[in-house]
Length: 312
Image (cartoon, rainbow, N blue to C red):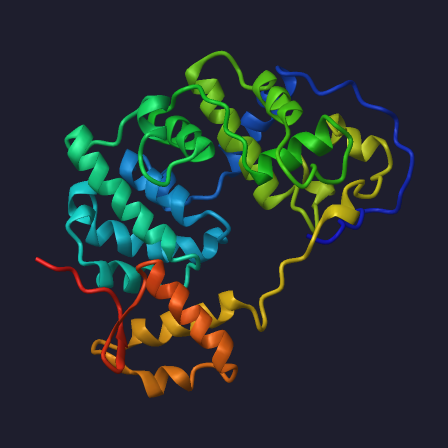
């Protein structure tokens, strides 16, 4: 990630009262209830399974790309039981261009575990969620908050950035989540279930649509008067030297994406000669093909490549 330019020239602003664990959640909660985006997984008829799917899909992927695929997904596989039985090739086609397609395979492993261990119902407890394939600390906390309305400490990139700026006075948080950040985040979670779930949703929303990494809209911020970063004159990113911008063009990720795209578009095995033409660097292509096979994302039969075939 590149360093964040200040939204305004660096100027001295009267220091606000420190944003506390009561005033910040209350202010953001009021703002969220008036302005929250109508995302489909926020609808009143959402299910825990739908929330879990949305969280897995949204990892490192913009919401605008996720929403249409999520809607199609929930129409096809509205329950973990439906998805657990889906053909792997169909799952990978439905995943489309979301990226990191191993997430789709892990999500299906998760659905099968939910069917086998929880009678097809997404569990609500931390321990049971964390025991599911592919479910880490963040996803478990998000499902508890957004699916069940339970109190949990939800800490994603957006929430880290909001707390770093509003409370810590920093342009951006450190490159990796720290124990100090987790402690600070926990201190801001309200005591009750409903207020805690609202705080998780509202702080994440602020980071997603206003307090963004590259172009924060400080003039539209509902908590600008509480923001320590604004009061300090928008100091530069103290961690900029440790950040690395992740390239795309020419990377193995791009090659793998091209191969997956070619196979998703075909409904019959694709000759190896056709796949060979997908990328000009034969050595890099072979490395990527080998990795895709090892990951279970594609298979080779003779002189043809295809998406995985489920065996009876």
